[in-house]
Image (cartoon, rainbow, N blue to C red; front, side, top):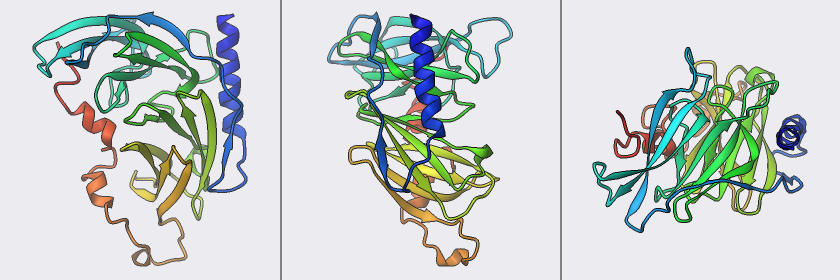
Length: 283
């Protein structure tokens, strides 16, 4: 039964990757996905506690960046990193990085990826949610990319998860964006189109309770930026510099562009959380 559920989730995921959306700004809701499953419990956080996490290392000898590891969650009292209590340890999680886990803004709900045990054509991870207020760990009914195969983000309020699915090695002029409503357990697909094809990739960043999508060039610099509001499913292009027929100076840069990047393409709210030494513990 477990294999069937994972295989069915994979079928939904793969089917969504192949779909062609009819319009750049148009959303197409999928059928409801499989139900969320409770897979563990821990002592709920007190009102004065929040999460912190420690990666314990590789699950098997010789593990590299695409292999899973252990991860232990702690309760931190009164924001004092020296006053902690171990809550639980989970295996087969994605290796340490700036993507896992992702916390809500109050650090009382965490989302992390766990590798599927059954063999799949390419690495996919189940998305898990640890609710600090209830002490419950749930496996959400979607499969998401690894940090190597693609990135994903969960909003700061913990209501939506999203990830881009670019094709043709990042050379396409459009990308399919999957948006999962965590409470309603439904998936919506949107397509973002830029003016022209090119070499590069697609990235999604977290911005407040929404997302920013980047079309990057060969060197990793953004060529186009879009803003996605998951509450309304509005996808709006802020800047598109892929039209090679135009002078780059004629394409306005968004007012908050430089402050948003803070000198690095990889800096977004999730990465800023990971820079906090009181969030990611070390031995």
